Image (cartoon, rainbow, N blue to C red):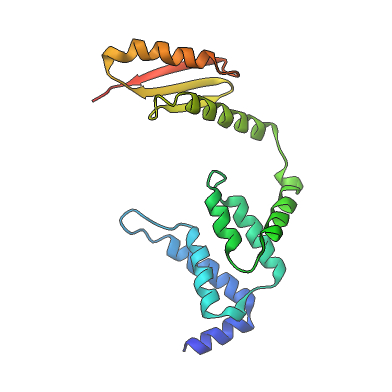
Length: 186
């Protein structure tokens, strides 16, 4: 039976591609104890099918486009995910960089006013979090130069902490306004 499936998949690489997508998506929907792989299951389905029928690889262009789309969807904050993707298959890192650079050069991936503002907000949030290293559980958000900091501290320490955070905020360039919100401390 396996030889028959292997033969069909190797004769029709596009069927194999769509089988991987369908099976992977279906597996990704299964939740066990609140954990599911989501669309990441498609990657594992592709690895399994590649081990089962190595000759079922789609044409090279499909691989490159698929990799570029996957890299675009990978969380930018997790470089280890890029390492995982780049090391899969026989694609060299130089080829992967070329694909990423080509994809970024497309008109649909150009910088916009909104994307610049989002990056500025993320940079400001990151700077505030870094400067508030004394408060590792501070929740920080920012938008258009306005920063909101949420802290859990005992009632009797709130004025002292408000002053300390105020000193830190005054040293950060780009903050137009900030709000410190305290939550009850148990």
